[in-house]
Image (cartoon, rainbow, N blue to C red; front, side, top):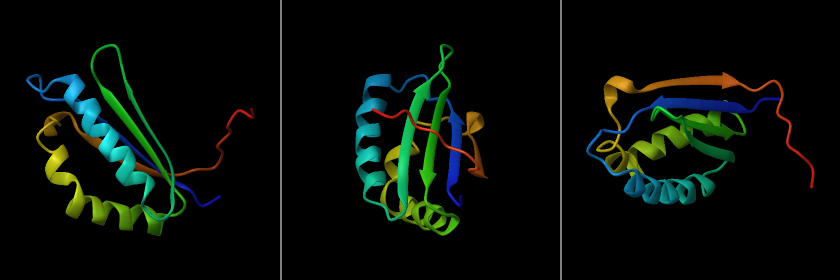
Length: 102
């Protein structure tokens, strides 16, 4: 399996409304789904307000290309929401992914 998982953790700036962030996230979903090599995207929030984003790409090249396009297409819309002191990102190679059937 050559799939790549990009995992990001961050907090929103306190003055940014959660509802507006979730509306922007719908645009990010739409953008991501149109990228070559896209497999899935998952956004979740912990009880203490940390956001976790996991994006799966078909391979490292697709992940890298999408990151480059994101900088051009979407980064300016996202940056005002995310506290940079809280941001961390990791890229890993998937060894196993299981999805429920039916």
